[in-house]
Image (tube, rainbow, N blue to C red; front, side, top):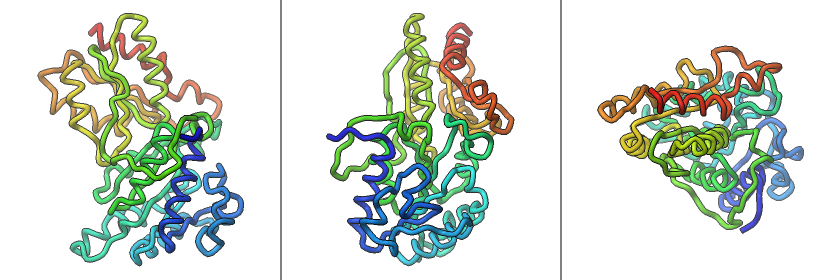
Amino acid sequence: MAKMNMLHAINSALDITMNEHPQACIFGEDVGYFGGVFRATSGLQEKYGKHRVFNTPLTEQGILGFANGLAAFGAPALAEIQFADYIFPAFDQIVNESAKFRYRSGNEFNVGNLTIRTPYGGGIAGGLYHSQSPEAYFAHTPGLKLVVPRNPYQAKGLLRACIKDDNPVIFFEPKRLYRASVGEVPEEDYSIEIGKAEVVKTGSDVTLLAWGAQMEIIEQAAAKAEEAGISCEVIDLRSILPWDVETVAKSVVKTGRLIVSHEAPITNGFGAEIAATIQQECFLHLESPIARVCGLDTPYPLALEKEYVPDALKVFAAIKKSVEF
């Protein structure tokens, strides 16, 4: 297997798709010759031509409107929103058009060929317009799937699964890990099933749950907890919609405790849905209240980014509080 960072892995998945489907198109702001602001599409216009890898006007609503039409025609539509913070002008197209195409036609037509890639989260000193984590907004929308990788191996396998899925998918890419996360990735095609969480580490005392870049944080917290004699089970959710209730509930039944961590603000973040569901499924097995270690209920601060993002010390503090309850 080759050593790849997350950008290389994403590029490889897109390359395979473009070679596989003559009608597949990649489009978005600066994705052509420039290769995207993070260079995820680098080299693909030269390989497949300007008619298949091309820049769009600076209009996210237009990008998704075009993407819906292309996907409805049957061509794999690989749309990029340059930053997840920019996705809101396209909100209507995604939640009222993409998500409802199949339902409103009684499965006569759909946009299942649509994959929306977008970098999300903090860690690059991007300030309030380049650091948000908007996954919870879309998790409220039946008809969509939401997927988040944590490393290059997952990025390629999950992106390929998203592209092959029969439903429109938003693929959130943790931009902090684009070049920081490096690992072995098969050069050939492979897929990772959507909707299945991964138990990264088994444990007995407390379950830690996160996704994307926050996985590194909870793994660091788990290491600190081990030094203090606390055994943590670490789970990567990977898929926000649908999410793997069964795997999480099975873990919580074993440990009796759950801590959920995400970068997005705590109020109405997806951790709230997880907490509500798990207390319903595991109420009689809980040894302490389910805890959330999340971003603050403020706009994303540039100067105070380190204070805003949940870190290993905050998660470790939550672990100790949960175990000592």
